[in-house]
Length: 354
Image (tube, rainbow, N blue to C red; front, top):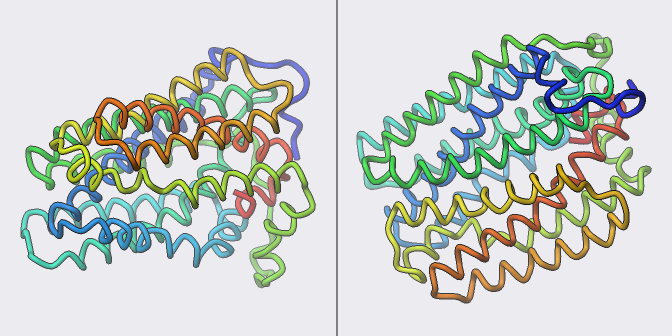
């Protein structure tokens, strides 16, 4: 593994002078905005079609199951093949999903099962996209440039969390097909950008004739178990996400509990991005250097309290504040995990660990 944390530390401005860093961040921003826009639109679309909150849960399950089923395979693919090509193929699949949703919205059928099918296909594409793109950042980072790239990639993600959902409210109020067509356009831009990325350091050459084994596929799990700092950060973050899924029910909360329309719902979803972006900016100025574990525990506690408030309030202002605060707290764990994984994981295992 290249030591990218030692030696001269580069600033964000230094790193942005590298063309491939700009291409990577730009393409990520495009498809992240598209993905967040589509996610906000899909939940609202399903709830408006059926009026049942449980169907939002089924949609989430349809998107999550492929990620869980492919968890070992997707990481191995990212470590075994060209990550840029894996990411581009996955994005092409997401583009087809967005176009399928455009067709669904225009035809306006009564049945909602096509949305679940498209959601499952989208989840399958995302299962392969995530480990591939996360593992690409260290490969475009100059020596001493990984920490600012991680911070900027977090900023890209949180900016997308604001812009995508906020735009979804306006676009959905025009027509769902407009929102999905915008997603397709943004993902297409992402594909074009990511295909132009050139790695600063070549990936470790792997023997493609070697047959993949179960041991190879699960090596990421074994590495996490052997690395206590990774195990602690990932486990805590995992449990917080599993028991804090109330944010996924925002379409139902906005309609039944807060009694607000499409645009207000979009801004409620965007509150998560505002909170996360604010915390990311704070951590960029004052990064965690001491008592990281304690800070992580406090953040998870705040995340849980914010989720409880969100589920019990009937005030839009309080709900907005709750989403903002719990997302800011969640950003602490995202920032810690995002900083630890690339620095302590060898390149040949990054896909499986991610």
